[in-house]
Length: 156
Image 1 (cartoon, rainbow, N blue to C red):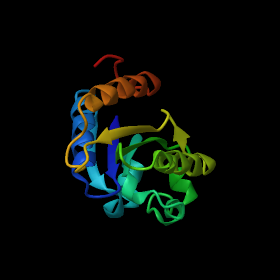
Image 2: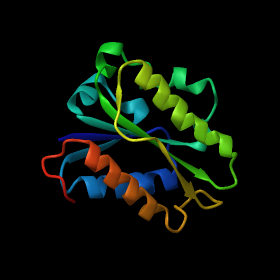
Image 3: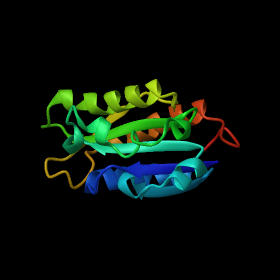
């Protein structure tokens, strides 16, 4: 299985979380980490599963239409397995989590296959590191993902 982890922005806590997710997933699949603005249709086609990582900084209501993933042709999105995760500070507006859900809703409307509910994970005030316990929460979320996606074997 090929997994593409896409980062929406250079954000230390988002990168830390994505590296953790990729490390766990690499035990059972080929994983590639890229920035969303660098992805090309070939990488998208290569991936069996796409994990979209975003941050509070991209929570503008208009941005999902400008996101390079949502700009892909419908043919590339159809039946693509994906999920969305977001990193934000606890001090950020709780409504900012709606961005991850809005992005997932828009992709699902274009026939992409949501395989796990979007999740929001929290970083410290400086947004440089994940909050204590958040990588554990991410691991639990990842276990749900692993159970829903047909990996070669069903154990980590």
